[in-house]
Amino acid sequence: HAAIYDWTRWAVLHRRKLAIQRLELRPDSHVLEIGCGTGLNFGAILKQLDPQAGRLTGVDFSRDMLGRARGLIERRGWLNVDLVSADATALALGERFDAVLFAYSLSMIPDWERALARAWDHLLPGGRLVILDFGRFERWGPAGWLARAWLRANHVATGRAYPQRLAQVLGRVSYEPWLGGYAFVATARNLRRAN
Image (cartoon, rainbow, N blue to C red):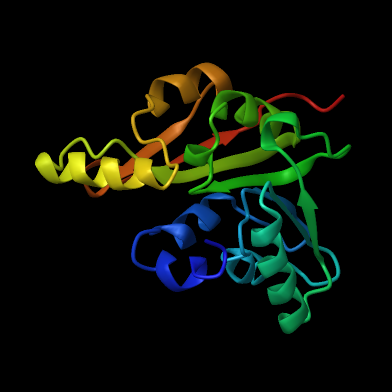
């Protein structure tokens, strides 16, 4: 799967730039991407970061995906990117981040609510957490059933009640569905006060 991932993602994984814009990054931001895969979002994120002051940490459960991401980092000469092999539901990085991104990864995590809670724990006060993922294909009619079946065959859950559950887990959430429920972008800001 890792070998062909980047070649096929352009056809199905849309709105990445919008999700990265929703992070509202500063040049000195420290960004955490959970489920970073092959590093497909790294270039767009790093364009907004100062190479000396900004940092990006990519986390993925798949060592094959991280191997591809490591190759990309080496080819591009990015010195401000760290990779971590970890289970998102047990994430304990020992630091907090200005921004956290899930891009088409939350739907692949069976215990997604626990992963989301762990991500939220890693977010600094005032930081933003953005989720870009598949929706429920509500307005797709019979084609929606086919799309959901194809995604399920590829270990992607599409029947989750994200709008309601995200609000319960994160509090105030902006939820933007796209293309009849094909995908959505959800944004939450951590309003906790600094300790």
